[in-house]
Image 1: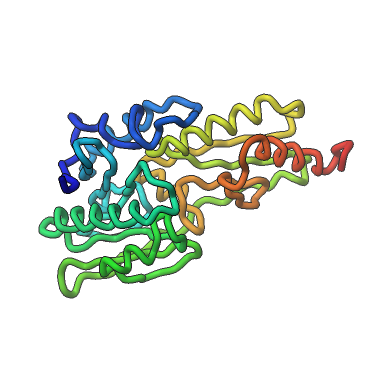
Image 2 (image 1 turned 90 degrees about the vertical axis):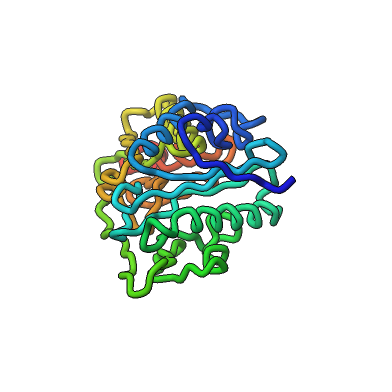
Length: 276
């Protein structure tokens, strides 16, 4: 039986693979209040977000979401167009090409769904083989209009003569408190994703347990809405950035206790530290 697509709505939100009970979360340990993911989707649906849920043999396996550009929680200016928000096919290994093939089909279905109402579809692609890959979107006739490594702003016009989208200018500036002997941690997160909820909670736990807690200034910024995406836009744009005294780091590179160890190392290297 071929994969079937059904419109995303309040009634089938529980079928989303990234919401509590979904396939993406099965067998994994998460911290934080994951029902925020469902709440995020409910709020965005009320704002005009659209989407499709993919069912394989009646099992919800994937989804694709897009929204009118004027409400999409990305810092993309594209009047009259829509913005591709998220797409994911769950249950395969990251290196398994099946998920890319299925994600391509889901995006094609979303394009067909959006074609009559909007002037085009904008998207942010990543210079990565499996994470929102630029090459996948280009194969679907998107064209690159701007690059800010590792992301690219991509555009698929549905009409002739439509103006290309643009990225809003970055607004956020991370803090650097080394001169005060303090580690400034600026971390963005979003309730749209269980991994983001997990990493934000994990950061709070690591900082609160540090023996020199008073030497760490943690600020977390929630990016859930369009206004927040514009106000907290960084370069390159992402809704899950983390800065340690102004240096951007990737949380995905720290597994197990290495995140705790990295923060401890940076605190110990601060001016005034006995270990510095």
